[in-house]
Image (cartoon, rainbow, N blue to C red; front, top):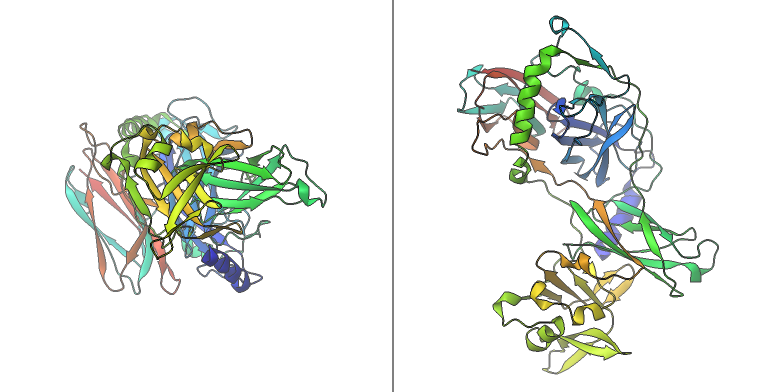
Length: 544
């Protein structure tokens, strides 16, 4: 945690006063069905167009003139990010803008992405956002083929259900790229954005009105149920925020004079349940409400989405593919580095896997019979957990106070709930016999009881505790185009890699497997060289 604080201070000293974040977002395609996943690749620059690695998290919103329909958080690492989100099945048909921003920038149109979304389950449409044309008058958009600083090569005609290789080459320097290969089925209507090259020469984005998030997302909350305001410190409170499933995600915040709390995290990945507990100096009962980090900007009306009878075949194929691929997210590959929290970094725990021992009914009996470095004792008629440590001379001493006790990564200040907890629901016990600093408090050790199915959220928490659903930062993932299921291969997306590292004067060979239907497909690549020069290419081929 000391490194965590020092890195924040260092960033505050090094960030130029006039520097601001500018975000460019790319997606695997531009036309989707409601219910589809959207895979994203982000580039973060400063106001001069150079890679900017200060911010650790970005915010995405899918917006029409009717408002925001989807939100996502994407981690940034050295100016690059990758993630995905699902378009809600209730999303009305229409054209949408995908905007990205950080705490250091406002959500602006520059660098955003226009997406067309079709809802095949509902007649709902964006207000004034759809027009109808006869089949003979429908003209889908098809981008020109280009080769700008990078080359794509693949046979112009390939057979169905065959292995082929896409080659990326022609780079003058090492490059950081995104690559997508997808079915161009005639649903695309919007011209592609001006690309990364045009973005780098565009105008700076507006500055955000929040502190920079250099290590990860800052979670804001308000304290309810306590007397707030004024300068009376007795009205202030301390809150602990922890997540089910990860013992490293523990954060402490203190309320300010307006009853607001800030938790400085190292980015919490995935959608989780947060357990938030509030303690007031006077012992008053209170709880916290988390604030949304999304700004919900207004966007101008997009061109209407054109609907035509000519699209029927493509929509039927897309719908069949979406139903077949509903479980394909399980095959995604995580590969980008993540900024990790440092709470337990470098500490080797004592580990007890309870299935290796004779089972006992309660946690208190487990500590007596198996986990002999932990002991329960009564203090003021309540059970308190002690950690037993050696001082190196075979004598023993007890650390009774300031032990951070957790279950499934959730802090349990009331250790009495552990004593009679059903030990048959436990899998493991991890004991960290080293002092850790958390929110200005030194704990003499950490204990984490791991249950079989995150049973911690079913515990009877007091009124000052809230268990809330939390949308964390999206995992950085790639889609390798694996063929799954026993039915015909109807994949519309053949490949997606949001951060491909390519060598200079060499090539990258990407294996593809063509689907079991004919059609026109497009391969796209975009990114920047080591010196920041943008490169891009677009290439079409036929599956017969």
